[in-house]
Length: 284
Image 1 (cartoon, one colour):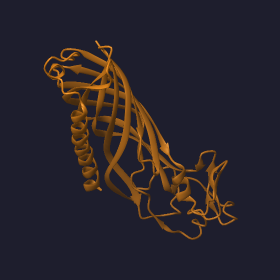
Image 2 (cartoon, rainbow, N blue to C red; image 1 turned 90 degrees about the horizontal axis):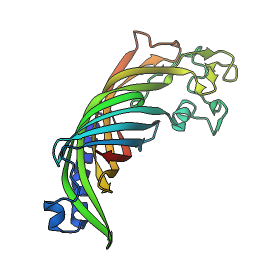
Image 3 (cartoon, rainbow, N blue to C red; image 1 turned 90 degrees about the vertical axis):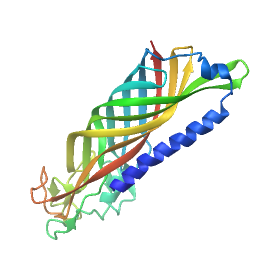
Image 4 (tube, rainbow, N blue to C red; image 1 turned 180 degrees about the vertical axis):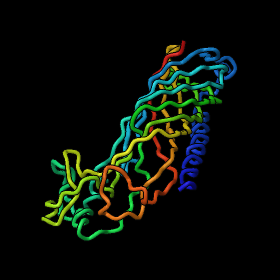
């Protein structure tokens, strides 16, 4: 899992190089743009609002709006202070994983006759949770270093030049995460499941264990910052987040409760999640 996460971060870095090279080759080769830039950032402060949208939405999904304050201490380098509040949760696939017999979504999550919890009280089964269920959900803050090595100009129309910067950024900080278990039920209903017993349900679905925690957060990003009116900017980019993962393994389906028993083994790893970033900023 660690190797997979590292490979994902490496892929973003390689994509950044290819993307920047392609844009640079398409830029108008004017010496004035490179040597005497029309817009300069050195010594300026940039304030922006960035919206992040998760792209790998298998069992979890999230959006992460952030306020980004950047201090440009040179034309190519800036220090970013990013503060956001993520809204994350599970997808329909998680509900279907809990109930493989479900054919449609009903008022109480997935409805069906083949719940993984059915009959667990009388016939205990060994179960394990799934990895990569921790998701950004709550406040988060990162401190990042941004490198903008390429400045160029695109001419879509003769009188409409678009100035841009290509950037690469590395950041780290802290965030709140949420974890909705697939396999650990907190409340058992003996009359459900055709009388065989099943995990209790509420309006959100099966009553499985939900946990929150604060933990470290790291990210690598790349993209383009388009400059207009001298001070305004539109940012389009990709960001790969990395955080710690943990999930219970090898417990019996009859071990219900509001928290994990001390005897339950917890596996650890890393989660990598790709986000698309789009933002608007203003430089002072």
